Length: 271
Picture 1 (cartoon, rainbow, N blue to C red):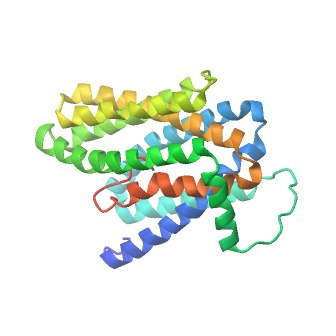
Picture 2 (cartoon, rainbow, N blue to C red):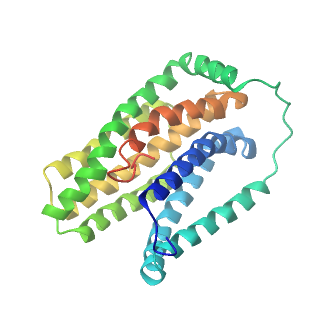
């Protein structure tokens, strides 16, 4: 990218490597927060984490656009890589309470045991199955239909950028709301919040006017964070620490694989 000679096969290889890295990162990261925060503060900590992530995403998108416009996409990726190096250094400096050493096991045995624990929890695999179906529908609809509708019916990229910005703002608002909102039936609230995504799909299908679609995206952003905070907190509370990362890998496989299958057409919204 820096030399202007990037080839498609090189980008495919790098994208595959990035996918492997994400596959390793997500399950491992799910086990970090419960080791650093007391059990009665995990919901609030998850909300703070999600709010910070979404706020940084909004600011980062704007900064990235300026950087690419001024210096080019290669330098934009270089700065992005440097930011990951900083994050690596910060995580490497984290210290956790001493844990009992696990007995060495083969990866295949760990996978079998993880799958057995996964299917034994009906609340876990049913929600993952729900999210698998939802992601298969929404990732293609939003990432393909959305830009096409924006280009042909809504005035182009500027309108789509406004809609995406509204979603990001909603995600921040949802995280802030979850700092105070402590539902007793977290999975029920999470499932109801996930269903709100249909509002955005219908708004794009009509399509409605840009302000109305942006309002739908704002609402969906709020509901998405309500789902995520309740879902992550439930997993941390109900799954033993030594199984959390392992079961999170099955959660990631079922929840995100449909989104990545459509990445040739756009970015996976659910991921």
